[in-house]
Image 1 (cartoon, rainbow, N blue to C red):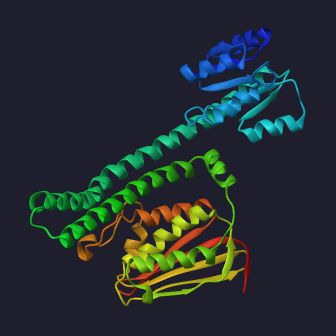
Image 2: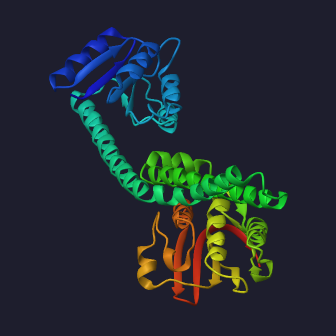
Image 3: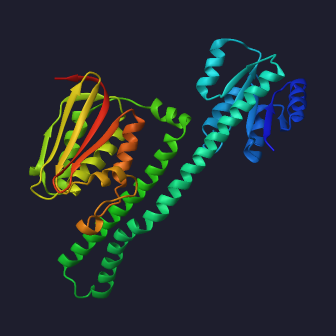
Length: 368
C-alpha cells in the first residue's frame, strides 16, 4: 500500500487529509511539525510527502532543504501545502526541488490528481533506474573480472619475483620490477575509477533532476588552454612527442573544465594507444556559428563499420590480434560526458588506415 506522510501543525488539516486519503486506499501517516516528520521519513520512507510551508521552528523549506542534501531521501516526491498564494514563494519552493504546490483551500479532486501525477512520475523513474542498474550490473559482471585480472597479474607476478629472488636481484632489477608494480597499480586505479564514473553517469543521464543539478554547476573553459598541455603530456607519456600535430583555435566552450578534461584525456589517450610510433596523431578545430568541431585523428589500426556500430561500454576491439589493454570504457565515458553537456561525438574509421573522432561542442565565442 502506498504511504503518504502529511506534515502540518494544524490538527484539523491533518485529520481532514488523513480521512480523505484513507478513503481512497492510501496508508496515511501524520506529523504535527517538520522535526517529527523528518524522523518518520528517516525510519519509514513514505512514498510521498505533503508538507505545510509555514510551521514554527523548522519550516517546510528547511525540511525540503535537508532532504535535498540526503541522497537516499531526495527522490521522495514532495508537495507543499500553503495558504500563501505569492508567486515568489511558489517559485522559491520549486527551485528548491519541490514537485508541486497546492494552495489552501484545494478540492479533493485537485489534491488526488496532484498526488497521483507525482506517484506515477516517481514510479517511472524508479523503473528506469532499476533497468539502468540491471544493465550496469550485467556489463560490470561480464567485463570487470577480465579487466581487473590484467593489472592484478602484473602486480602478483612482480611481487612473486621479489619474494623468490630478492637475494640475487640487482638494484636495477628491483627498480624495474617496482616500476611494473607501480604501473599496474596505476592502471588498476584508473580502471576502477572509470567503472565507478561510468555507473554514475549512466544514473545521472537517466534522471532529469540529477541532470539539472549537474548542469547548474556548468561553466565555461578555453579549449586551447585545455587541449594543448593535455595532448603534449599524453604524447610524452607514450614517448611520441614528434607524432603529435596540434592546430587548435582559442575557443571558449560551454562545459566545465573538469568534465571536458576527462573526456579529452580518454579520447586523446585512445588515439595514441591504438597507433604506433611514427604514426601521426592530429588534433585540430573547425569553428562555425555557435559550435566548434574538435577533430582527433590518428593513423593506425582503424575499425570496421561493424566495430564502429557496436562500440560501447566495456568493449575493446581486436584485443587478441593487437594485444592491447583497456576496456574501451574510456570512449563511453567521454561520449557520455560530452552528450550530457550538449555535445556530440562521431567516429569515422578505415580499417588498417586511420580513426577520426569528431566532437561538436557549444561555444561562447572564438577568436579567428
